[in-house]
Image (cartoon, rainbow, N blue to C red; front, side):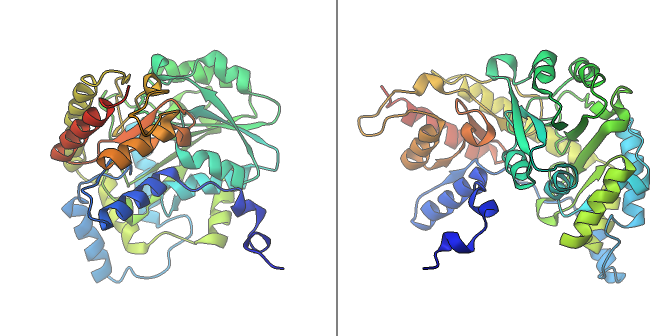
Amino acid sequence: MTTTNNILSDRVMGLAESETLKMARMGRELKALGHDVISLSLGEPDFDTPDHIKDAAYQALQDGYTKYTPVSGLPELTKAISEKFKRDNNLEYKPDQIVVSNGAKQSIYNLCQAMLNDGDEAVVFAPYWVSYWEIIKLSGGTPVPVYAGVEKDFKPTPEQLEAAITERTKFVLFSSPCNPTGTVFDRHELEAYADVLAKYPDVYVISDEIYEYINFTHQHVSIGSFPQVKDRTITVNGFAKGFAMTGWRLGYMGAPKFIADACSKIQGQVTSGASSFGQKAGAIALTTDLASTEAMREAFRERRDIVLSMLEEIPGIKANHPDGAFYVFPDVTSFFGKTDGNVTIHNADDFCDYVMSSCYVGLVSGSAFGDPNCFRLSYAASEEQLREALRRIKEVLGRLR
């Protein structure tokens, strides 16, 4: 007898559902039932794409940019990205070392497919973005977490990194600013990692810098700018976060040319190039004034400060002081074992389910990010929503004994 499991591949059966999308779906279902749900689960700016970028896409449509593009990107965009890397990051990627993809997530998928053989290892700083783990597994690799908790600002030590490297290690993958923690690695910390990696010439680095423009330190540093790893670093970035262009699905990477060529080869068989008019708009985004992006960053900074001050008023919540992105990742272990008389909190999954069912605020359990002691709160929401959500959370957590 044929069953669903007989039809579907082992590959997809072993793939976990995205917890962020799962929580968003639960929120929509509760909202459909008439509940006032506040979702703080998705990593999506609540701002609209700046008008000058939208105008550029409209003009491109008017000019007939409605056809297929080169797989790796329109020449004007790869040139703009090359210049941006040099201007902002002190990175030397020529236009033929750049691949434009349908979102930065596809860039990471392309890289894992192009670089990993079955059994290869990929060192991943934990907590990590949910898709890193699953994409590595989907590509036949074995993710190896290097963990640091809230008390260390979620920053692994160089010694931890070195201890995780084996003869099977293909690359090290991390994000800065980090999703889910908001942690930003400074120059000294990145240089210490580069010094470790200098001893392992066959180990590459994938640096996910999608939150580069949402950095409250004003000192974004790319690990690829250090000479120890300059020729072995792949830098991934995109337009979703800094330009509020999530729905445009436009990302990019700079890499050693042989890796860029391999990723273009993969992409050519899967999706081909990103949208033509979107790429024209992307070139404008990178080559014009960043005033809109800077205004968004300052709004996020203000929201972060509101969230942190309100979290401090909730006994048992332990949070670091994130310097980027738009997330807070608090430790909630003090609530484990507590109950309201009906529900007992055993872990972060239970914590998030309790908050959603009790006060209709959507959070994401840290277990999805490699840390079952924490939850992720996205403050990419209005100040009014954030204040109300945290008021509700404080109230329902006060019922636990």
